Length: 338
Image (cartoon, rainbow, N blue to C red; front, side):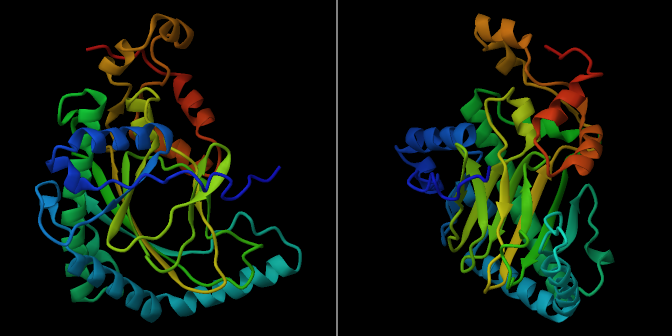
């Protein structure tokens, strides 16, 4: 049975005014963040035009506008014709009755930032675009780490716990997927990006403020993540669900195709290092009630190496996350408690 669209549209999508973290309203703002992570898996952060302590990472409106400009120009110059050829083949197959639901209507490339950058190796990027992306990556990395510390505070974990949990031997992995979702004359045939949860840690999305399409699954209904200018959408990945022992949730989300408008998206993934060992934070396992602990065997989620999870995820990305967690439990070592 098809999942209804916007059946939960009356719910208020969480928008966090980070400036309130520096006022007497901090407690209320932290409460909204906690509720968003536990019940939505997503929240949106409008970025102020002026400096505040929280956003000392300082993703300025000017930088965001330039990232958007050069990304759209790069697609038009380097990828648009190639995509049109793919689109023609896909539509022809779909209109002849072939199943194209396993195809994504998107044009993408990936910029790796950590542990080492691939910016210098990517073809067709001019010097200015490389410099803009380097500056953007630096600021979005700082913002991701600020967000992780806010989550630590909300969870009652010591500051820095999540960053250390991601570190592995070489630090976190961090990169940006630059995507375009061009107009599609047959939105009924193909999605922009099929429904999935994100495998990693925390994802910071800079999306087009003119062309919508992103939806998340909430209480059995698809809910729009409406575009907002100069804002970052934050969402929880599978690894944070594991580390929080299920208190925070990664949720299914997708991108719809549109008959007009070319949606731009830059999704920055702040993930564990390849050899990082991921397991529920002991403090969050210990806070389970006796009944919950007995039913779950103390820890609901497994212990595993992030690279092993990613190898499984790449084969089963567009499927439910629960079988992936179960598969990682099969040969899991006991959960560390210290």
